[in-house]
Length: 193
Image 1: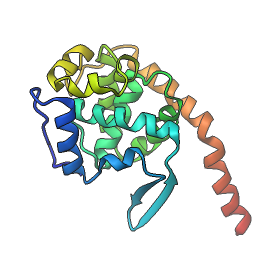
Image 2: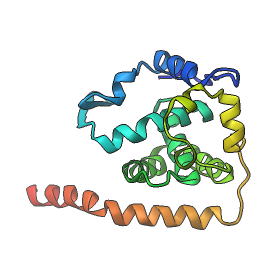
Image 3: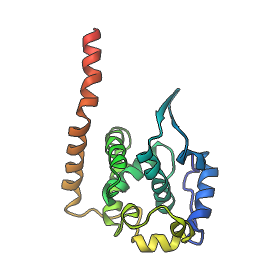
């Protein structure tokens, strides 16, 4: 977990910042290659298969954490979820599934952070996912240069007219995609009563 308000200097290369990020968050490069993902949720730990599509998304997601300076706690994850929903993540379909799920967690527990991240993403000119592959060129770039090239918006960007309908549209898409996963557990609970 990152220290609250952790900053990554514009002068750091993405490679240097990733190393600091791993130290602060207690993650490591192995999270990009391991067969299983460990997801602690309160007193429980959930293990999920680390599928190849996830392995392609996570490094770019981590770079977004650096660029935006969002923590890796639940609040920070909801901020980055909103940011990635707002800026878009291109053809990374697995990432879309994850952030559309995160949308509902954010709405329930961290709506302000989710919304601020979304608006910030909408004001940012370019998506990292659409602009740069995770490559040596990206790792060698300075964070300042990357922030400038992406046109990163301020943390508290101003709301514009199209933000609300765009957000509602994404929430409806998420609801349709995830409704079977919401309904099935409720049906099981009802059936077991």
